[in-house]
Length: 151
Image (cartoon, rainbow, N blue to C red; front, side, top):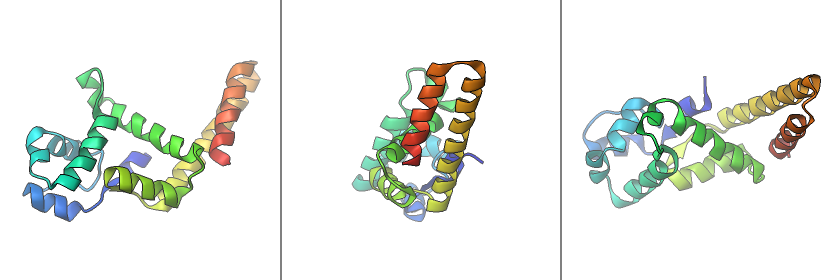
C-alpha cells in the first residue's frame, strides 16, 4: 500500500458537515479530490480550511496537463514533499506535524517511518544495481540521496 493511501484529511467530519456530502477520509481518493477541489466544494468551506486545502491543490494538483491528475502526478509530488521534509532532518512525528500545519492532512507516524525505511532500502538497491552496471554517477547520486534520508 502506498504512503498516499495512508494520508487523511484532518477534521474530516467537520469538512463533510460543511460540504453537506459524504467523501472518503483519504486525501488522495478520487472522490475526495473531485469534491474538494471543484469550485463548489471549496466555496462551502470555512476560510481556514479552504486556505489550507487550496494550498494543497496548488502544490500537488496543479499540473500542466489536466490528464496528469489521474496518472499519479499528485501522489508523486506528495512523495517528493515527504522526502524533502526528511532530507531537511525532520523525523516522522515532525513530518506529520508539518503536513498537518501546511495542508490539514495527517498520517500515523509509524506509516511515515515505514515509508521512509522503504525509500532507504530502495535507494540501497539502486546503489547496488548501479555498482553492478558500472554507472558510478547513478551510484553516487543514490548514495547521496540515501544518506540524506538516513541522517
